[in-house]
Image (cartoon, rainbow, N blue to C red; front, side, top):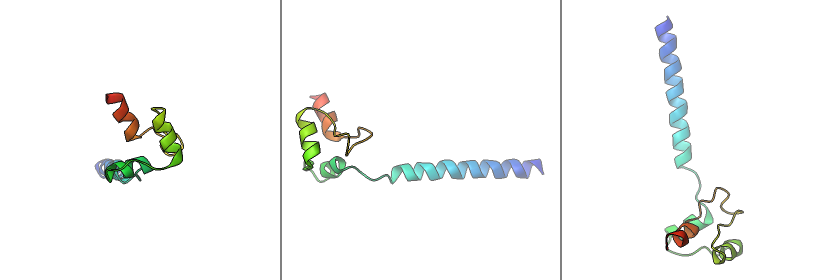
Length: 75
């Protein structure tokens, strides 16, 4: 009986971890990431102003996933 409960708990834990991993992959891209994927630059006013300063727009990229900012660091 303990074996069945243990296996059930492990199966639930694996399902939760797998579900979170899939949800993270399906996260929506930011406007800057979408523009980069199309081979263009983001045209939002806030992003353009931030890019001129070498920064990431915090409104559109709350987790600083801005690709344009990373490119400027590499140069």
